[in-house]
Image (cartoon, rainbow, N blue to C red; front, top):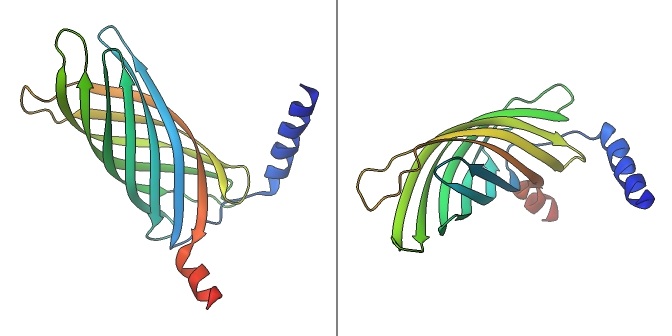
Length: 180
């Protein structure tokens, strides 16, 4: 227990001098999850986001997802765009963005079958950089369904808290140029 506490304190102390070095051409990979529960349903989602920094502030990417819940499970994919508000030291990076997602869901039980779900959403949050490339990502997400026929699952409007860990891989193009 004491060793774990010492390691955590060292990481946090070392992280006080760290800051984000995101730049145009960098690649961002984030692993995150959410859980939602109310009177009608409860479900969780796990995301693996892969994004490319079009500029040092603007990130665009793809977001595969895995869903699990009471009586259903599924997979999906989404596209997103994020604007990062870089701070002076860039250790804490607030962001806001929009996304569109499509999911295929399989339900069990009495009304078993396959359903589809499409939704759009807005989100915001902050990335706290522990090292130059490793960050803890926390934010809020508001989405609403685009269901248009009975074969689509309509979960209504959803407000979620999301938590994850992200990595700035670095500028892929810069690494190629330096290697040549």
